[in-house]
Image (cartoon, rainbow, N blue to C red; front, side, top):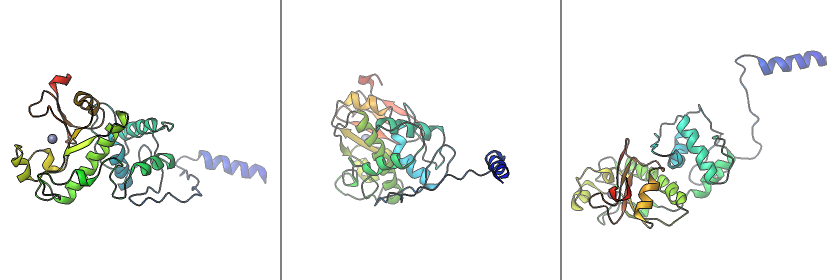
Length: 244
Ligand SMILES: [Zn+2]
C-alpha cells in the first residue's frame, strides 16, 4: 500500500504538535574530564547544561553585555555562541553541538578553568591562599572566579592570544582592607581579577566586549598599573585616560 504509506508519512510530517525527534548521533559523546555535554543546545533550551555552556561563552556575548548565567538559552546565549563559533573558525549558527563543544573541551582544564588561567593565580590574596573569609562562601567564590576566568580567556583571545597575568584575584575581607580596599569589594566575592600583560588602555577597551560589568583602568584612582575587571551585575566602567 504505497499510497497509504506515503499518506501516513506526510501526516507525520505535518501533524500539528508532532514531536520532532532528531536522529541520535552514532558517535559517543566526547568525554571530557571536567564536564561533557550530552545533547545539542539551542534557543529555548534550559537546564544545568545550558548554564555550564553560558559560563564558558559569556565572554563573547557582545559589547556591554554582561550575560546572566541562568540556564535559559535566550538571545544573549545565541549571540555569545555565534561569536564564540566565529572566533574559533566555526560556522556561526548559534547552536551548540559537537564542533562547538570540541572547541570548549580544547580550552578547558581538568578543573573546568580555561586553558590560560588557573585557580593557583587567583586564590587568596595577601599570601593566605584559599577561598575563605570572603563575602560569600568559599564554593561560591570558586564558582565566581571560574566565571571571571572564562571571560578573561575570551579577552585574551580577542586581543590576539596575548598572555595576560593576574596580579590579584580573590581577597578575604581582611586582605581587601589590608590592601586599602573597603573589605567588601568585588575581589571579596571572587568576582574580580586584576590583569597585566598588554597595554592597559587596550585591555580596558577590549574588556568592554567580554562580559565584564566592572572595569577600572588608567586614570581611575589606584589603577594606573593594572586593569581591574569583574563580573558584577550592572555596569561600572572607569578608565578616563583611555576614554572610558
Ligand atoms: Zn581589582
